[in-house]
Image 1 (cartoon, rainbow, N blue to C red):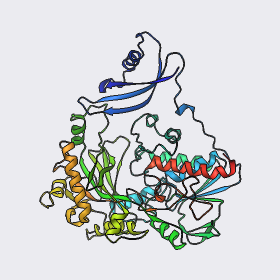
Image 2 (image 1 turned 135 degrees about the vertical axis):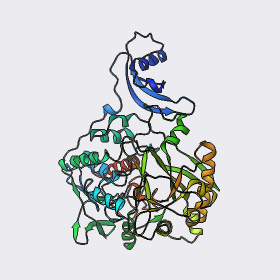
Image 3 (image 1 turned 90 degrees about the vertical axis):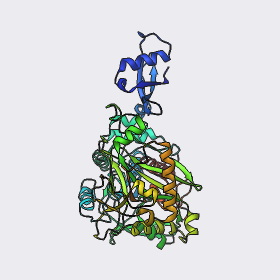
Length: 521
């Protein structure tokens, strides 16, 4: 009979299968010579005490071969059996995983992406990094694979209610990701590996009767009688389908405006805003592991911090150990930063978003009213911090100690941010209430992580695209927009996801809702 067991493993014995087997046998009260089949199903690190140890969970069976949940899955990407077409707006994780799910249900997906394919997109990323040129349709947020492709590929989510996470991870493995994402507690692919995986997913979609259209910007919708009748692409081409999935991501502000033009219901949504904080990775390793340099079997260390300041959350977000800060603006004249890591996470820097939650009620009280009030505040902050004067994507930054003390005395540190930093009084440039909460949150975090409060770190503005500031409402059961009978808001841009995994699972969920009307499941 198969069961699960958890053991602790010293860092230097993580590859010692004899040691691991013996520990499992001890748990089962069996002798060292007993036979045992075992497979790893979860791996994490406990660094609360020195030295850190691995926490390993295994599926074990004394007699029969161990079969994990991932191995039980199979996928049948067949050609359309229903003759029904599903137009999917956006080729991010919500859009692409929705397309794969369509194939499983015999629906024909047509993915419409405003940006370029994942490899052609690189030229525009190079332009924003090196020349400060922002292509509004092809950047770190828009293009094949969505925002996650070139901003790290972290796969951690707390959202368990949308479906089985293992299915999403297994699909990624089947398309080229390493199998360790199936077992790591905080799985990560890396921005150097994801493009190939995304290309493979596209090949699966197209080879099974689906279609992917690039450089295809949805410039209008045709709505009639409570239904979406067609998409207008690039102001001239008309695309009809039976159902429409809107998976445009958290930064497609023009889509919100288009929907509003047609009196489609929208509502303001809470989100978070702040800065990126960057430390030397060696310092974070020493804080978390008590080791400098860290043991070669240990990954670059990370942290997750949260506290309440004045009844509002302040928290770390999208932490990138061994990572880089990148420019994530989607329009000229704004400064937005994000974080990413390559698969090896071997940069000498660690960065994380440091943000505070912004409620609709709070922003209403400050004069940002209506469905677009939260969006207007986000846009205003991003534009007001664009102050370097040369039109580039150089980002305003401040030494961490100066930021906390509200002064401008110390110099900036070396940074991973390629466009460059310039010294700026962020304690004055950020809205007062945002700055005060970030400052007090940092003081709280500094008491919990000894060494976090250091002049070797700096903060960089602006980390503002944590999630969408607008929600497109939908029914909880059917996922349909309340005004339309074939229109499905989906993923981060609609306000129903917060990362690669949750967006992918939301895409799968929406397709199940669509398929139920044809399959009666």
